[in-house]
Length: 285
Length: 41
Image 1: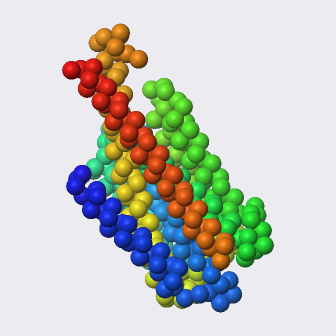
Image 2: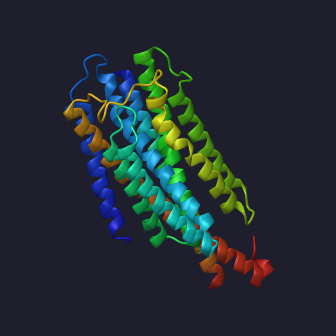
Image 3: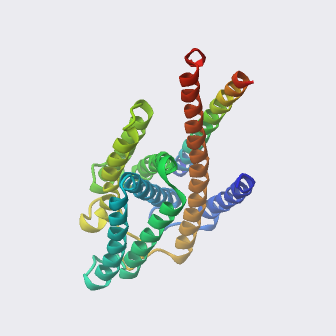
């Protein structure tokens, strides 16, 4: 696994460099906004990556709480499967707002169930908590990129840096919730820190669908979706957008991997130090 | 054009800062592990 890290790092670097070239040079220039529109190739993939990371954090946090008890764990598994099935049925039965395709809702539901059980298979106990911290921290980094690049696009296009539009406000609230999650982790030393942080993460993740669907339900200043049924994006622009998303996803995976290794190692060092101080109190710092 | 440059530069500045903090934390941890190993030997 350690050997794979530099190889994957090199692939990701090449992919990011190619995606940057495509975004700045190869993608066609938008007619009304001009070159400023190219911010979109960094802003949107960063937002999608942040949402994905917060969703992973949500799943890990739920599992950290429910797996403390066998019956609640079993119940949670059935609830997750039921939610996946209900999502698939609802996607094709209920009339969705324009721009939301039933097939994308159904496939997202199935993917979420799959990811939940993948996390369940590969992470348990403290490692599950370490995974949750890693995804939250990297998610905050990507969310910060979204909040910085957004105003840099808004200033020349809208004439203002910021407005308290529902999409912008909910994104800012999401960032604040996860920053408070990280602060809680950083400054709390109690044995219940992981449990409290997991509960906070669950509430925080509830903001993710609110941010994502806000432009469908409350159309305001933020641009409407340009992808899917309601969108009218140029196929060349869509290709560059997806390429940048793949590159940022690989980069996020790399960062999460490094952060996870750091967290696991830190916990091992803390345990060793605690054990040392128990065995020989004079050796503790 | 300056806004486009600023957005791309800011993105990479944020990512570089984060990678630098990760590297710094790894180094601190490596030093701690070294200290523990020295104490044990």
